[in-house]
Length: 330
Length: 158
Ligand SMILES: [Zn+2]
Image (spheres, each protein chain N blue to C red):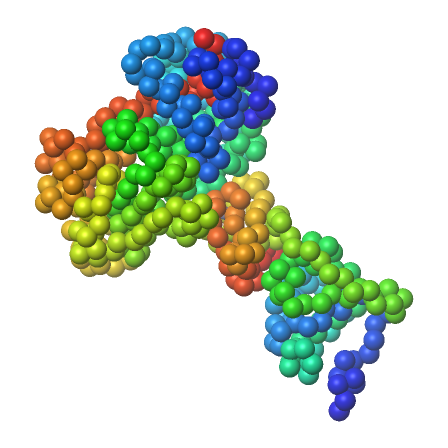
């Protein structure tokens, strides 16, 4: 947590810009300014295009990955990012065999791993609020890699980075979010980050049971972000032509107390060529992956499919973020 | 019977909570968690229900004999029951107290979100809320969940 941790050149990123993220916790997209996000994006862009190499900028540093929930994708992404920057990685991954399964508290796990002299902790945990709690317990920066259904800020960074690079802008973007908006950890983070841009419009396309949580709505309205809800199939069709981006999340059957209600609504939230035909021809389709059957494979070969590129952006974004938070050497 | 005789006898030391909406006196008891004071033999609690009031028509009054409500408790009472007046009595002298709004509430209230870290067994996490009076809610600083101010009595710890 203390900002004195930043090594390398005093508070300066490889872009020559002030490194506003050095030594900071990355808990919530509420805490990130547009400038913070743009700093990560610019560095990720340079990494993508090969003009800046971050390899070995974290040699001699230790990154702990604490994953108290199965998540191979995000774990691997952080693992590869940290290793390619030259950091040593300590991981507590499989809760089934770790001390966490034996009933160790998150608090004790954080204290224990700090004892190994780590410079940063990346945490995935099923409880909402876990990342903030861990950050208060830790003396080193904590990066939230998913806190229950609450937030997933690095996913939102790569999502907005994808929108920016594919659409050419984020300001004024009209973004539809479709599926389970209530239990998806990526949706709140995405909304909080988009709220830092100007004139963004959000369309929440979900059944009543899975509509976005109230604190997300409150955050958006307090910041003057326009949003609308579409619930029924007709409303969804009506909204489609307005969208620049359609962000799809998975609907899980277990979320419905009544299985017949799930069967009734699921069809309205499946993205296929037919649904896309109601949208503009250049509409971008995004998905945090992995998908099940809410996103038809027939979309894969359409130019509208942005999700594979979106997934590829995970690595440069996490490299850039780790480098900045740890104040890596040039 | 005059309203004077309804007010029982005056107390020399303690707190009088007045202008509580009629039949909400028990909510005050819950908010103060007076159950925990049962062990204290010096404390007496007098609850008056449905007393005639010029201001409210009918009201409740809670008299806490030999108990001084703390500043934190006073602020939370004023948040949940904005009409309440709090009078400290010392040696028969009455001192009216107007608590400000709490900016934060630490402990006292359970988070309504079951998956919140503060509800995980054995985890040493104390609840902490930001008060958003203008929206009629408090927000858990850990999990962001909102709780309506009028629902606070349902989530008191202890
Ligand atoms: Zn909470």
